[in-house]
Length: 238
Image 1 (cartoon, helix red, strand yellow):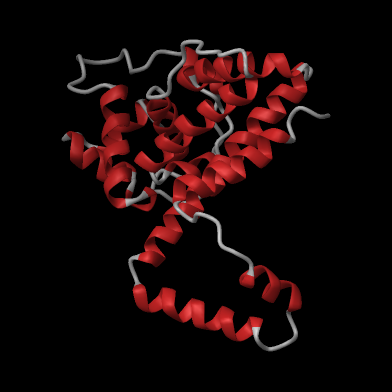
Image 2: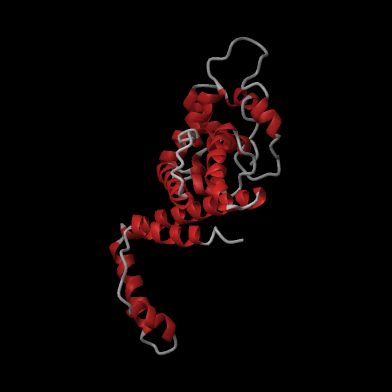
């Protein structure tokens, strides 16, 4: 993202971002901090969506000139990195291993889902994010420890965690979309009529059989648990 909020290949230097100073040391003491700027951007994204987060909007909310923000976050790409790691601080990091790695992974996936539902912009931000910050790394440590009893090697454990996170992000994005559809009864009814017509046309026997089968619980929690269990059951084999 460029400074005006557009897309650009600016890149993020992880050492400079996470291991460098959090604020400029030049001039007089600033009236705000990188933490405050990031928290303000998170609140804006939570209420208005990721598209609303621009350097100008954030500057207005913290009461600063937009140019003064660039020493903390030189572009929106960097700000997104800070935002993702900021909300990742809400994730638990203390080991809570039960001895059942499948149960531990279910718990990890559930807290990820809860986090993404609290911050609906997060799945989209994760799809382009590349640089784990300190809060993200702390949660990664917990997940890798939970995966150790699987017997997977280090690379496979990283891949398994990435796969789990990608599943949760994709599922939450779908949940949010479905919740929006559910708030429009006319649209839901139209989709149901369409599928019924397709199933009855004789050209889609597999779909017709599926739609005529006894239904399973379709609550968001039940659906998430079913899909998650299928994913986790496949992680023990490599």
